[in-house]
Image 1 (cartoon, rainbow, N blue to C red):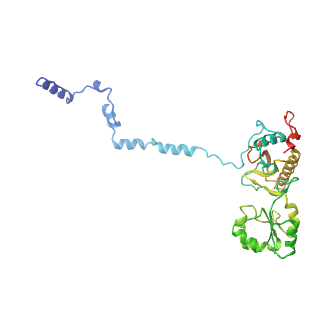
Image 2: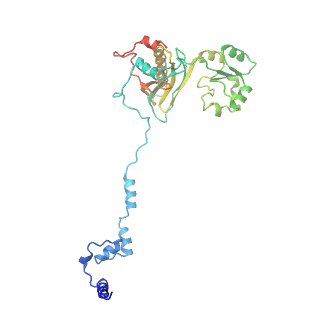
Image 3: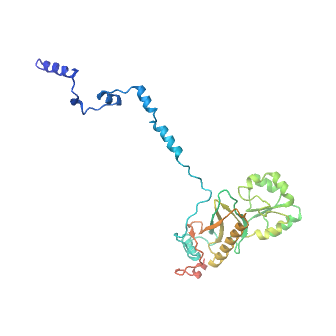
Length: 316
C-alpha cells in the first residue's frame, strides 16, 4: 500500500500539469464544434455564428429559392390516351371466345356484354349523352313509369302500351319514400310543373331517371315514346369514356356485330353535332363482361388465324 502512494501522486501530477503535449491528444473525439475549434486554438462566439448564417448559408432559404425557380407542371386539359399500335388487339369473334371462357356456366341471358368507347376529349368540355334502341335489345323487361293525370286519355294509352306505373301524386309519394320501382321515367307535358314542384330532381337526378326535354322524356304523347323505349338504353360519357350494355351472353357474333355498329355510329353522330371548336375522336373500343377483363377490338369480325368459327359461338 505504501509503495503505491508515490505512483498515484506521480499520475495525478501528470494529469493536472498545464504542459500537455498536443501529440498525445491527436486521436481525441470532441462532442461539439466549439471543443474542436478550441483544440486548434480558435473559439467561435455566438455573434460570429449568427453573422455566418446571415451571409446566405441558411439551407431553408436556399431551398425556398430553388423551389421558386422551378417551373410548375401544367395540369392536363385532356384525358390521357394511349398509343394502341403496340397493344395486343382482338377481333370480335376472338374477344367473344375469351369472354365466354370467363363466363362459363352462366345463363345466356343473365350476363351481358359491355362496350366501352374511349374518346380523345377535353376534360371541361360537353359530354355525350343520348338514348339508343339497339337492333337486338339487351333488356326487354324494362319497367317504365309515366307521370300524367291518372284519369286522362294519356294514362289509358300508356297502360295499353306497357307502362308499369301511371299517375302523379301516388308516384311522387312513392319516390319520396324511396320506393323507385321503375327503370325509365316519362313525363307528360301537362304534368311537368307538378313534377318540378314535388322536388323529384334531387332523388331521380343522380340515378339518371329524371325526365327532361333534352333527353326526349318530357313529351306530349307518352304512348308513342313507349314503343321506342322498350328495349332501348341510355349512354353517357364519363371521364372520356362512353359505356353501354351491348348484348347478352347468348347473342351470336352477327347480332353483336349489328349492335356494336349501331352503337358506334350513334356515338359518331353525337360527336358530329357538337360545336366546331370541340373536337372528340374515337381512341379505343373495348369489349368486356361482368367477370371478364376488357379486350380491345381491332375492327375485324374474325381473324384469319382464328381457331373458332362463328357457328361455335352461335350455340349458347
